Image (cartoon, rainbow, N blue to C red):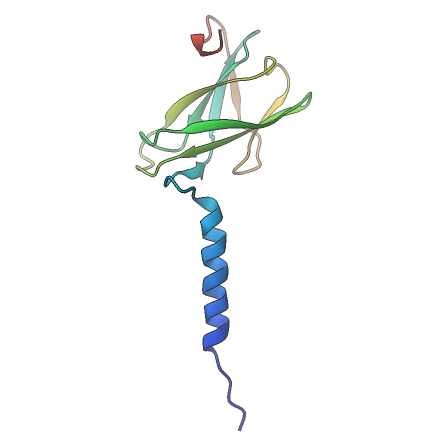
Length: 123
């Protein structure tokens, strides 16, 4: 009779899932969040991103900015998904025709182009 031990594979799966999960959260309890939409203003380096957190104190980082795209990463605390937070990032150059990419999802973020005065964050 062959005896199969199943405890060890289950343990390895649990360890693998714990390691994958550890990469999604930072030490301060913030998680990477999606950017469902953004806004920018003609000629401005300011981009205002909506973040899927609700009073989660989001932080935004430019992962890559080149001639073709701008890739943004946002982390925020977990306080619920009942509302969106807004956060402004200042690019080196106006967004123009470049694509805005959400680092979490890898997808293109719809950007609304606004007239008027941009926020003073990037003055």
